[in-house]
Amino acid sequence: MRWWSLANFVSNAGTWMQLTVQNLLVLQITGSAAATGLSVSVQAAPALLVSLAGGAAVDRWPRKLTAFVSQALLGVVALVTAVLVATDRLDLTVLLVLAAVTGTIATVDGPACALLGNDLVPTADVPSAIGVGSLVHSAGRLAGTALAGVAVGFLGTAAAYAANGLSFLFVASVVPFLRPAAGAVTYVIPAQRGAEAPPKRPAAPDMTVRQGLAYFVRRPRLVALAGVTGISAIFGRNYGLTLAVLVTGPLAADAGAFGTVSTVLAVGGILGAVLGARLRKPSVRLVGALAATGALLQAAAGLSPSIAVLLVLVLPMAVVESVSDTAGTTVLQTDPPAHMRGRVLGVWGSISTAWALAGPPLLGLLMECAGARGALVIGGVVIAGVLGAGYLLRGRRTATPVPVRTGERDGTAPQPELSTAA
Image (tube, rainbow, N blue to C red; front, side):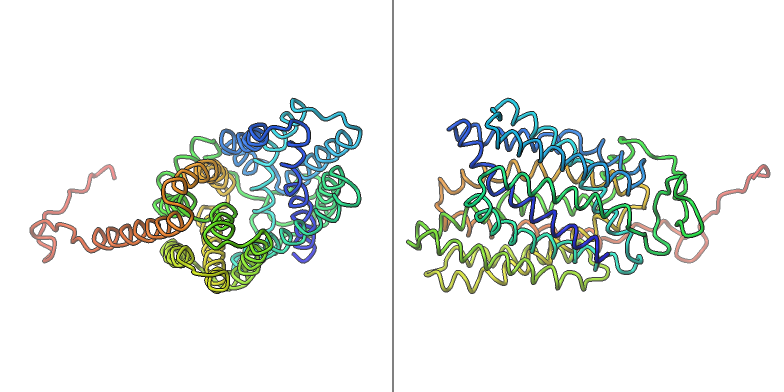
C-alpha cells in the first residue's frame, strides 16, 4: 500500500502538471477559446458514454493486469503528445483524437486503480485506504500545479506531457509487485497461481452491463448518493469559477489573493482527507449532512466583506466537503458486492461526468443573473434546503406505520395451507 500510494502521488502530480498547461497548449495551437472547451468535452465524452462498459471490463478482467495495461497505455499517449508538441506537429485534429483516446482508456483505468488499491489492505481498513487515496490526490494536485510552472518555464509545454507520461509508466512498473492483503477478493491470472496466490474470485452469473445498471438503480443508497452529489455539483463546488469572480470582483483583490484562497482550499482538502480516513462505516445520511454543512459555509463565504473573512470560512468549508467526498467514495466502493463494484463505478463515472459538464454552465448562468455573491449564497441555500427536505421526507416515510391485517397481531390470522408437494 505504501508503494501504491507513492506511485499514485507521482501519477497525480504528473496529471496535474499536464492539466495545468493543457488549455494553454490548445490556445497556442488554435488561438480559440471555443476549441479549448471542445477539447475538454471530447476528453470527457467517453466517460459519459462508455463508463459502464469500462466498469464491466474491470469486473471481468484481472485488476492488476487491467491497471498495468491502462496505465502503460496512458503513459504512451502522453509521451506521444509530448513528442508531437516538441516537434511542432500537433494540430487540433490530432489533439482531439488523443484526448478521446485518453478519455476512453480512463473509463477502465479509473475503477481498476481504485479497486486495486482497496485490495491491498484488509477489508476493515478499506475506508482508511480510500482516505489515503484522497490525501494522495490532494497532495499530488498541489505538487503538480506548482511543478507545472517550473517545467514549462524552463523546458517548455512538452515537458509537462513528458513528465505525465513517465509518471504513468512508473505506476505501471509498480503494479506487478503489489500483493493483495489476506482475504481480499481478487482475480488470479492462471500463470500467477501458487502457494502465495490469493483465492480466485468465484464466478458470478450477473456480469453484464445491463445488470450493473439495474443494480445501481434499485439500490436506494446509491441513488440517494447520486442525488446528493448532483445537487452539490450544480449549485456549488466549482470554486475555481465562483471564488475567482468573487475575489477579483466584489472583494476587489488581485490574482495573487485568489492564489492564496486556492491554496487554503487545497490545504482544507488534505485535512479533510485525513479526517475522512478515520471513518469506518460512513452512511449516505452522513454524506448529506456534511454536504449541507459545506453548503451553508459556502453561502456565508458569499457574504464575506473581506479576503481575511473569506479565508476563515474557506478552510472549514474545504475540510467538510473533503470529508463528505471521502465518505461518499467509501460508500460507493464498499456498498456493492465485490463482483459488481467495477460496474457501479462505471455508472458513477457517467453520472459524475454529466454533473461535471452541466454544473459550470448552469452556475455561470446563475452568476450572470445574481452575481458572484448571489450565486454562492443562492447555491448554498438551495443545496442545504434540498438535502434538508430530502431528510425530512425520508424520515416521514420511515415513520409511516405499515398496515396490519386483522388477526396478525394476536396470531389468529389464517395461515396459508402447505402443499403436500412442498
